[in-house]
Length: 227
Length: 319
Image (cartoon, rainbow over all chains, first blue to last red):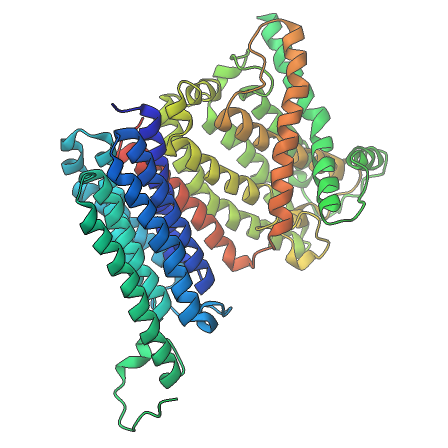
């Protein structure tokens, strides 16, 4: 049974998740990107619980719990353990494309993804899919765009994780009864990505003195001193 | 019919009387939040009284534009008040004379003449403030348009009295992304148009940093009083549009009797007081943006409004 209020709240969550994706592209400070990622994950959990309550899918309660554990608690904790000085630094991030143009491009991506999958989603006849599939794809594309536009490692990592959030949003609508073990594996995967990129970035910072991935394109002849 | 005209006049009177109180309450609340004492909430009335009793000095270099502008700035919000619901949730006599677009045009007309008058003075600060206000204005324009289009799509109408009823048609529409995100976008628009803190500092006295205030620097006496009062009314009108048209028509009179309309007055004042509290919280917790960051602030408002449009209209599952 579909409660219209549930659908409406789900659409509201989707809209706020989309705005968080824009904010991840448009924020100037690392802290801001991190906060908006956490907010996006919290909203995602809310959407998941809402769907579990609305469609009576017990698996989604577990899934929401896993999301909170992995993305709201574990990943920010890992990042603050491995990259604390870089994470709390207050400076402007370097970008290939400035922020207003980035936001406009992200807007085009959002509208494009709607045009792309809108017809498919509306063919399903399920209002939750109609909302979540285009918005999820839009978040995924915007996350991928932030990988391109940002030039530093931590926002790029958060971009990857935001992509995963978008895929998750579409996923809970399309396949709410997806086997829980697979979802659990994906959640562990995401945490592992955070650990690996976090440690890698820490090493890059120690050897190169910067986390700008653009600076890594130069090959270095001299032997690197490990500290 | 005569009753409806009388209620319309009562709405105009409400805005005329309480606009200075509203800005007085905001400045007092702000001072209290910042652990200062601040002036009395009736200080704006005293300022207006004082200004009306002073002589007016008008430069020889100015033209008729400078002289008629205070009256236009004063009258424009009054025209808007006749179109929007301030005290009643049923349409009054002049409700169908114009829609939300007309209300926007009236406010823009006042702003346009204020900018012209600022250029007319030849004072270097006036044109600078005017050009900055225009910059904020044209950045706010697309947000206003998207908000307007989405609202008219949801409500199937552009008349404010019809729009306000559509939000409470069902709980689902009240919590729909169209409603919530448009509220956020319009709130950011109010901050920009009203010259509040993230965009402009309303209490600043430094001419170089002024955006909205420097347009009225050359006015004295009655002209200054009218521009000031007009500005306060415009801000109250924007708050009324936000609270009564876009948020929900709670607290408005639904009956035709005069008693119900009079009871609506304190209820609306309470509503506006809560709004002022939120505004003060935002103003004290943020700092003024640099001039070229304003485009990002309004860009964010634009993104929010477009997100509302995408989620509610293109996706279309909810409405």
